Image (spheres, rainbow, N blue to C red):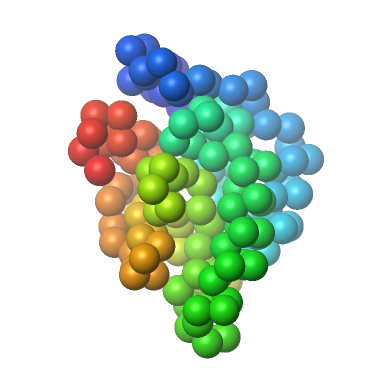
Length: 145
């Protein structure tokens, strides 16, 4: 489903390249590193394509970006503020300008799957941009987000 959608929307995009499926072990490693269970739709996306080298992050890039954010942002924020504004998100796509598309993780460590958000790195703020991953992919590649 996702692979076909991405291929359809990126047929004229020279930079987006659908990747091979992500192995289950790598998905589990990414979940473990991030510290939160990935929503089923994100796992389904990764099982079809491990990123697209443009907008959608691979499982390895999810780990890398999480690592970078955990190293960079604590120096700017108090511990509680860091947890709330940086660490309680599952980043899985990027706009290329330092902002990420993500899921929010609630205080009880459950992932909010009611919407996809954009996390704006300069303000540490989020806003809703899509109802699910398919909606986000469609909006992104149609220049609607």
